[in-house]
Length: 422
Length: 197
Image 1 (cartoon, rainbow over the protein chains, first blue to last red):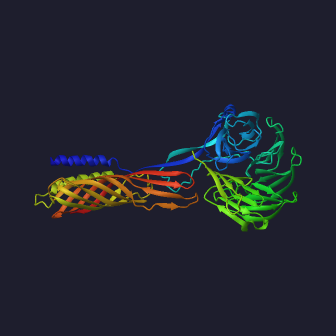
Image 2 (cartoon, rainbow over the protein chains, first blue to last red):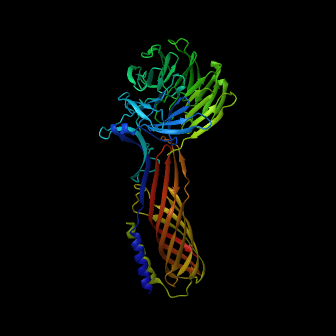
Image 3 (cartoon, rainbow over the protein chains, first blue to last red):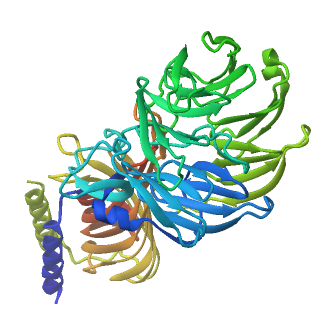
């Protein structure tokens, strides 16, 4: 019996010895952006209106009359009834693949979709209708393409888990973030005085409208579309204005075009043939511009998204004297945190500071704007604003905010429509 | 190589027991509190984790139990295992017992439990934006056999050969996106010396 116990122990021990040797497995999980392809036919058929849905990844904004239009990056446009800013109501969502920019004239919504310009009848936001398409109006939105798979209309995040050699120790390996190479030629919108009803976009826009023309900018060109007949837009002038074009702001008889290296001023007395008057040069930075009276307000910022678009470390608000449009002169440069879109109404100047919130300045004294900070609201992301009467409409990664700024003492929050992430 | 050394040691141990076990008054405790305390080296002849570097580790362990009869005791084990890049504290439940009633006797011990990480978690900044590193323990299974040499009432020196299966994980979140998870299973032979009372 005792010998049996010995042998039992011996066998057990032998079997355990076979399992000796450390085992190791390294798993690396990371997210990459993978392209979503669509054929041209699918792209055309995909444009439709569907029931209202939550904001998830907001982009450009436009107001027309009592309606707000908010771009959902690469997905389409939210239509919001803003008759009562205290209770904005999402009416519908217009699906437009590869859409970034928009403008609205009457009942016609102009929107880009990949390389196409669409004119969409939105008289019934729940039952929209494409009334015109101008193909190849813009450069492709994304650089990469696989002609066999179709057109890249969006990028989605995909989680990848890889098993790698265990000798690859922790801390040795850099972060593997998804690479999304975006051809920064996407069109975005900007506004103008148009017709009786208020129709305008934010300062980050690349579309601008007047009565007869839709002005668009891509990375290198100012491109016009004749919209005298709104349902039949016609491609018009195409003007090369250099590299890094970002935004367009129409003011009176001029167009102010923001680029990564400066601000271009166009004489738009003849709306079909804008003429370059001058260029105000600045450091390489991302920069929208707004204008009031003799002054242009330009924000220059360093890109903090990791895309390394504007890496010069400049974050300022430049005030430029444009009383002589042929010779713009910098009056003063004010340090900011990370300024994005901005808006000015009389002496109320609002600057979106990205993740640092929203600033409200009294701009009565152009030389002492920094000394007249009325409010700095923090705790949310601020991307762009539209000022309309005493109503401030602001979008950011967190949602749509609306403030009443009739009192300089206090910005009164009227409503907040939160972004809901997928 | 280590496996062969272990086999020789094990075989010698059994032979030693057979040859030198003497019929004398038993010094073994019949019932009551039992404590086995040991220090050992945990060896492996191949390690996918520490390839090309010194992979050996030290183990300190204490098993405290209630002995029902000399061939069976049950109790709790607590120890510290020092691997080259991490410290693990195994907390186990287990059984142990003597095989013979003589003053030199083989014994067994089987422990099962969880190894808790004692390594300080790291938060490093580096060129890639930094990362948080979190060490974690896991399942531990530790059977062993050995020889007890009684020198006084209930007191014995022990020589022990064991096997330890210890799971351990490292979670690393790199600021900026990617996650790193390392799943390690240590499978070691343990040569231990100790004292039992």
